[in-house]
Image (cartoon, rainbow, N blue to C red; front, side, top):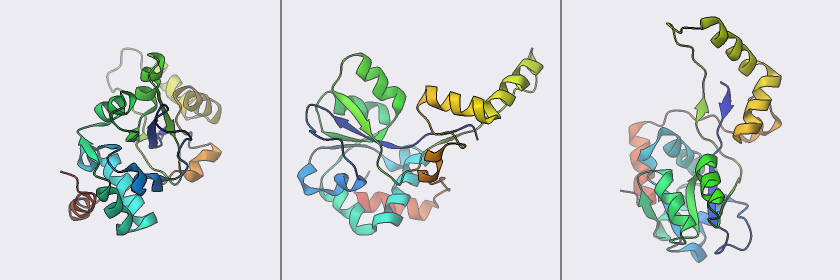
Length: 190
């Protein structure tokens, strides 16, 4: 593993006065009609996140999210763009590269990082028939070293497996299909 990419909460800075500090903001009745969420089934990382939320807060939390009548999107990109455009005040999931691109265009969007969280894990692989296999091995060695790994993750806004933030990251595990269906039903997702 070279990177742990934490799921964050996207919010519109014109509509939200203070960055949310807890995932419970998704269940707050004050946010009814304000949630723009990627479908849990759109990514294994998304369903793993909601499984973690279920474990942390219970089925009642997921039902409260559903009661807030979220609008569902097929991925993080349109959900985050919608938050930036003011179609809703909170979004899921926050992806650093998407948020940064919108911020560069002066969109009123940012991301909060409540804990606990989970997200994709980025592994490292080398091509078997590379034209420069030794260069690839040297680069891989650097990325797997503590210095190289910490630097890489600082630049990419991810969590280094060597970093202190790694303790706040719950490694995702595959969610069985039956549980994924229960989570989607509890959330009212399509």
